[in-house]
Each structure stands twice: as C-alpha cells, then as structure tokens.
Length: 428
Image (cartoon, rainbow, N blue to C red; front, side, top):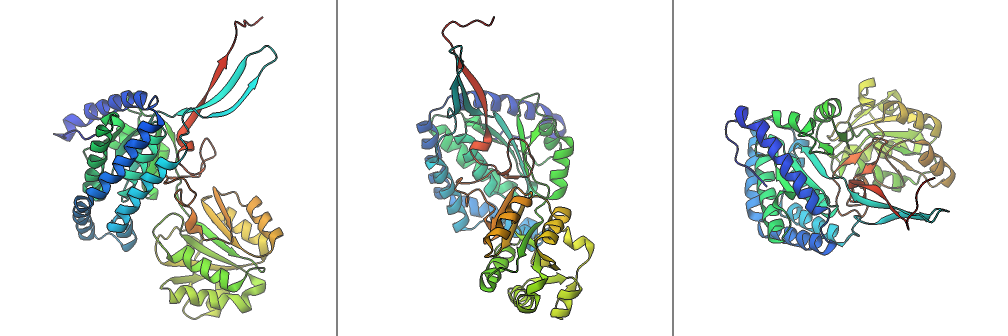
C-alpha cells in the first residue's frame, strides 16, 4: 500500500508511524487467514505480475538509465535489471510459495505431562517485517510472497535506484491482494526515498516492526546492525570459498569453480576465493586458473599461483577478505584441509563455502569443521539461494546464530508459542 508523500521533513515521521499502525492491524488479520485465502492471493499476485510485465519493465528501464548516469558498475546494474524472464521468475516464485506447506499453525512438537497437561509447540507468524533493500527490485515480490504466506505484514523500503520498479511491482501486488479479500496493508512500500525513513524503521515504528531484514551493500547492513532497536536477519558480506582437495576430480572442479565465480558475479553466493591443495598444484592449478581467465575472470594469486600463470596479478592480504561482486577471484595454494579451514575461519564471512573432493572422509570433516551458514560438497556456491533450496524464494540469507541461519524462508519467518490444554489442573 502506498501513501502520497508531501514535504518529507514535515510528513515522514507521521507517515511512517501510520504505516506501522496499518501493518500491525494487517498482521493481526493475516495471522488468522486460511491457507486457501493466502494461496489464492499468491496466485492472483503471480498472474498480476505477468499481466503487468510491460509496466514493470518500462519502470525498470528508467531506473537502469538513472543508475547508468550515476556511474553504477556492471554488478550493480545486473542486480537492478529486470527482463521478461526475470519477471516470469518472480511470478513462478510466488506460485512455488503457494505450493509449499503453510507453516502457520503447524505443531512442531507435543507431549503430555504426568499431571495430564497436554502441551504443544505451535508455529505462529513473527508479525510485521521491515524489509530494507537497495538494488534488487525482485525482492519486492519475493518478500511480499513469503511474508503473506507466513502470515506476516511487510513494510518495504526500496533504495532510490530501484524505486520506480519497486513502486510498480508493489502497486500490482497490492491490487491483487485486495481483490483476494486480504488487507491491502499486508504489503506497504515506503513512498519516499528520504533516508530518514530507514531510521524510523530501525527504531521499530513505535513497536510496530518485529524484525528488520536488510538486503544490500556492506554500508547498509552495517548501519542496520548497529542502529536497529529490533531483531535483525542479515549477513554482512559473502566472502565465499571453494576448496579443491587433492581428492577432487579435475573436470568437476573446473566446472564448479567457474560456475561458482562467473554464473552471476554480483550475488552474495558468488565465490571470491579459490583454495587449491598444494599436492595437486602441478596438475590442477594451471587448468583451474586458465578456465577462470578464459571465462573472463581476473585472477589474483599468491606467489605460487603467479608463477604458474603470468596473467595472474598479485594478491594482497586485503584480497583474501574482499567480497568482489565482480569477475575477480583470488587464488591460493594450501597444505591440505587444515590450512584450508584455517584460511576460511580467518578471512571468511560464515556465509557459504564449498569443498570439491571424492574423498568422503575429507568431505565430512570439511562440512563439520567449517562454521558457515551454508556448506557444500561437490556443488557450486551459487546454490546458496532459498529458491534452490526448495523454499520458493527467500527474504535474505542470515549468518547470525539466533532464530534463523541460512536462507530465510517461510519457516524462518515464524516463531512459536506453547499451547497448553488441561482438564482443571491447578499447581500445588
């Protein structure tokens, strides 16, 4: 739901507080909505996106042109850009969410006490989600769908670069929700790019917002984590690694490494560092580096990697901790699993890390020892995505240790309450 903005300095605070009030009221209705009602709304939302694809792409072209004039880089533009297939994917994501089991009301566990009390732990919505994002207009649809199905209202604050696209998408979704008989305020997009709106959201809008989810660059996430007065689901950076063990199949390793880095370089699951076991350097290092360079990737490496290929640029200590979000990868030789794990622990961001090996014992050790939200064996880090996990979509990736870790989907957008049934018991 979008409200008309006037003078931001005079209207932003009361506007934001009013949006919070509407969201809280909508959350109360959504918490009681039936699965059929929510799934029906998701189907209408998907169809509305398809019908409105031309309007969405027209708005997106304006956002793209404005971003180009600001000098935004290729990775940023890739995250911002929509085309017919990406709009179709947004609609497909909503339909996939509709197919998933409704977590609301699900009994997680139940037991009966010796005194006859029957106790159940039941899933319930979190309430109101505050979504703050920058250059990914598809988040408007993904977050709206996931929040609706999990019984939560959502307040969306889009970045200025994706504002026009996000506005069109949110209006389309709101109309579909209203036509389904659910509250229009289930989805609200902040109708202003004034930065003070973010501050009000981080303050919780007078208790209206229960959780904040940031999707954007390091500076945005740092601000949210430092200033938020409510719970936050987030990851700061995606410094992701691929470790090629001595037990790896070279062809498999080459395919995984190139895909992990180059499929989409601007996403948080893109690999940034390649670690190679020194014992296979003579047979595997050159083919891996060559495959990356041939795919258009700049390689920065340690001394041994530079010696193996003159095209490799020197890597600095800063490179090992850098999330490039660009066709750049740092490469280092390590003395086996122990050094690989130590490097990941020191420089990684606990987001996503992978091992390539046919040695099952080494794989099990890597998966157990690497403390990241997502760890993979013989698969690309680009699978770090809620849709690929069968969640339909995700609202973000969380690397924290409380409540949610990894892709945040339907279940992660719920909490629980205890339902206790008795037959007149009193406590002595």
